[in-house]
Length: 127
Length: 489
Image 1 (cartoon, helix red, strand yellow):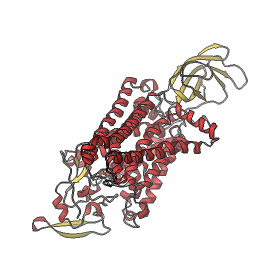
Image 2 (image 1 turned 135 degrees about the vertical axis):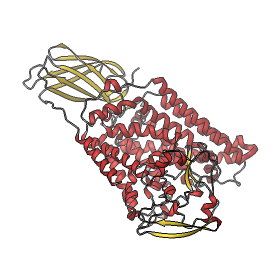
Image 3 (image 1 turned 60 degrees about the horizontal axis):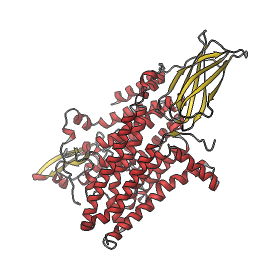
Image 4 (image 1 turned 90 degrees about the vertical axis):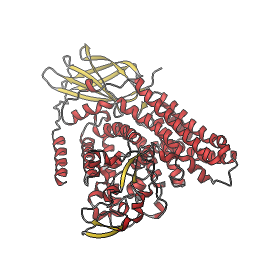
């Protein structure tokens, strides 16, 4: 029985110890806007702007948008954005349910640097 | 000794190869508890150190999606499996010296009122603090359960936390009354001549003690108590008199402690005790526990749909109640307690009036007789709610766990939703099936109490059960809208 207890403790430590944190940069500023505002259930247009630490527009990032509802177990919506002009990226984004969402914008630069920022968004019931 | 009871049984589960051996094994329960303890520790770790997005954290996904969905199905199809392996009572299993000292739980609290209050409190906290959205707070709730359980186990001789306080356990107790398994004894006559009643008193002793008992047939049996013994039933149930699962944690300590191998776990007709007169105590606290838990099922689901936010807004605008806790307390207090209590008393009184049994049956006896009928429809409401979340996010636990251990989560592969039609079907079957079962129980009860006036006696209760099901169908037909404190932010 003692062996079972020690084994269990070892399993917990191993699983928890295997966790890794991704390396990110905080030098990229992001803004997010949604059209229509406020969004309703259904497809909206999400616009993201990226600006570097030197206030220069970032025009060559790979941008993805992930939306999670604030309730556990809800399926995320994940979409890749396309650059439309300068540092503006857009993506048609489907809000699958009304309520509060946590939108995470992730940007990956050609040099491998990554950045992410979360935005809160409240989605109303559609017509 | 009061009358012994043995339900009609089909199968002794502990005779099933491998399964029976595992369940009877001296360390069987502890092994299951350690497994769940490992899970609980991982949830606490992720809750404190992981992403604070509820959809991406084990601390929120595992309890609020998988535990809730699986536990209601397990209660209906098997029994009180969670309490069987509950990690919160590991201190009792291990700290036997603590468990046999101390006094009994105060007499004035030895009822279900504290359990009703704890259920109300946890559901109120769930909405007020948005526990469903907070991995950190959920982790604190888990820690709180460990602390409360250990404290009460240390102070009192019985499992006071399990029997009188724990909201999880209380929920499981109520709906395990539909389960197809129950503890009972193989031969009640063996219990009549049993000296030590180890099923409830235990076979644990700090030092080894050997006793020679005289058993049936003039024979003697050596009964050994010692440090390797098992504690008796923590909720003080005497195996041959168990008529209900209402306070049984299915820990099987009675089975392990019985020196005659007479206690066992049997398959029975699902919900058999709901049709058995006198299976439950005829007390207000027991009756209202069952009825209010049904109402709490409706209120808990109502908390997820748009009308609740409109109601909160109206309370704020009409009465100036902008404090969210007070606002929710009023809504929950009305919907989960005051209205159901009032309507239940009204139904009981109407039934007695319509059948002219005001002098024959007291209001307490009438409500107690019909209270079991609320179990299936209540379980149906909870199944409809919890399986919705389970089927929506069944496989999301995989990418969440992948991210927990530092791997990229395969959300595209495991983030899909179950077919919406299947989810709707499960919800309809849950609510309608529960309603039909409840109506059957109520009808049988009315026949037993009122004979030729059964239809009149049944009418108020049938209307109440129909109203519960109707409200459930309305709520589950609305679009879900999970908001935080939108009104108050």
